[in-house]
Length: 250
Image 1 (spheres, rainbow, N blue to C red):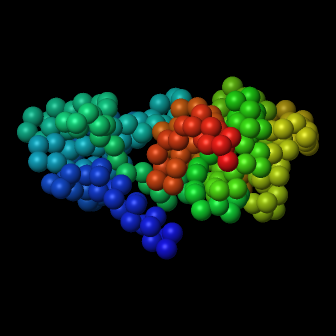
Image 2: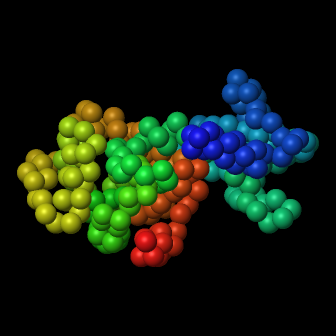
Image 3: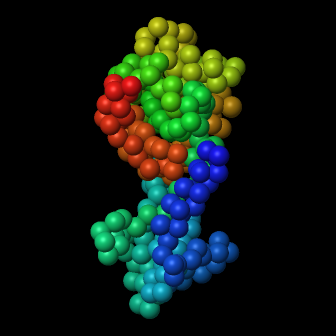
């Protein structure tokens, strides 16, 4: 029954994003939209998907730069060809957003723990002090949740890649969870043996390197801006403060 309810909720969320007169543009036709405006012909800007409205196209784009890639929203006028980047809002003031790509996000999950009925996605950096504080505050208190962990090393945390490599060497979700907790709570320093390689950037193993590619796509899809970040089963942001308050009441 819970699975059926999740499917219904997801469908309602998807329909709330699109108006009755809107439709998704076929992927085969996305390239044609670049003819409307020269900016869209820039090789550093790629149309991922698009929603067609009566007077415009709402574009989901991937912008590439030296710092990496990020997802952007654009608005392309059908009649004039004018193109605008930024956030759009409906008449009632709610932002225009695309439904999240669940497949991309789930493929970026490093491991999961907990047997609760509520699903949450936790984006965390094992070296991040705020992530460590959150981990300590929630330790043993998330029984009502199934927590899907996405490991996201921030560029200025130099030990984080080695930590992630060591965590991901765990044989299963249980061991990976234990390693994450031991590293973040200071109970284990085994990852330091990996730092002795002294190479920059850190040399991930092939398996972990492949995961990091999937992680980056998931982080981009979620629109992560920092760690720790929380999202519900529909990939909507969750307030850490509100979650911690609710845990204190239980």
